Amino acid sequence: MDEKIYVTRPFLPDRKAFDALVDQIWQNDYLTNNGPMVQQLSQKLCEYLNVPNINLTVNGHQALEIGLKGLGISGEVITTPFTFASTTHALTLNGIKPVFCDIKKSDLTMDETQIEFLITEKTTAILPVHVYGHPCNTQKIEEIANRYGLKVIYDAAHTFGVRVRGESLCASGDVSILSFHATKLFHTIEGGALVYSNVDYTRVFNAYKNFGIEGEERVDYIGGNAKMNEFQAAMGLCNLPCMGELIEERRQITLHYRERLTGVAGIHFFEPDRDPAVHYNFAYLPVLIEKERFGVSRDEVYDRLKREEVFTRRYFWPIVPDFGCYRAKHEKDAIPVTRKVGEQVLCLPIYNGLSLEQVDRIVDAIMACR
Image 1 (cartoon, one colour):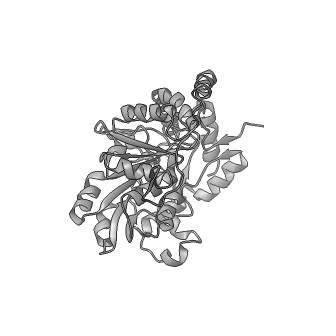
Image 2 (cartoon, one colour):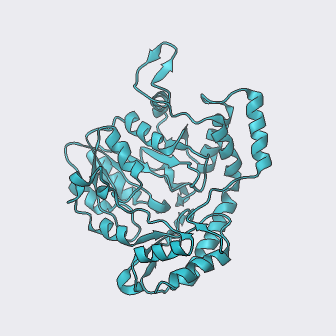
Image 3 (cartoon, one colour):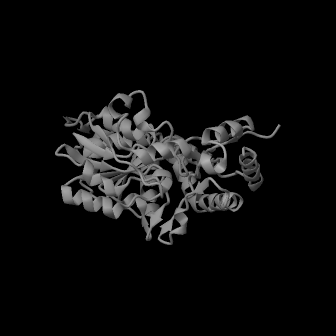
């Protein structure tokens, strides 16, 4: 029987290199609370991403909640319905109403031409998502935000290593939120970060991730525990030097998929790397499957591949407004593009170590569905 192929697998660095850092942690006798490994990773990430400030957290979701609290976001926030649950949950858990803006079929990011129609006196921020690492139109979004006095927080969970005109995509907005989950291109097993240019945010972000504590006798915020530990940071320090090699390997895998499937009626690729201004990270490989042209639906392809032990994912379906916890308030939202894309999108397997022979097996299984 053929080996199972999953949509992703975590990258594991050289074991000896990781063990050496673990030995150092033992020698330091310092496990958490902004230890030397965390400090070193913070510095190296600032250098790699070419950003002035980065604040490491235990995971990306906590980073997003801290960003919302730290910037004083309340009322309503305009965001995308085509995202992972964390984006919307972070708003709702902080008493903020998500207002869904439809997406563009061209790149699946927020349709910036619709944002102004959704702004009310209660709007305090815009929360776009660089979905699959596809860059939002940051210039237009931030022009709108400046016009109305709104904050911009980017969910940049998919964007590690993406650059636009030479600048890190996560340097955009008031704050960008990164995820370093094990499934991400760069990971710390679990982890996340806030990236920002205003150094004044550092104090409040630090407080919110440490129970609101600012000193032995001072607690001015109601915070939680969201600190990255030394073992997470050690994994990040081992993974970071591998990024160039990992991105190139994923690029080659992506090109092989395109070579095999480009021109097949009913299968649509997204190609952000075709834009000379974009240095893409090839973290995901989403396609749209149009039943009318391909002959079978996305769900039929998904089920057929699963029987062949190829496990794709329907990122993101169901779409957020159709979650049981949101449906009653959002089932009538005008988001036609999102609803259509939610029925068609399929993320194909891509990870470091996926062979081109395995890609051929996946493609052959897709073509056999027709």
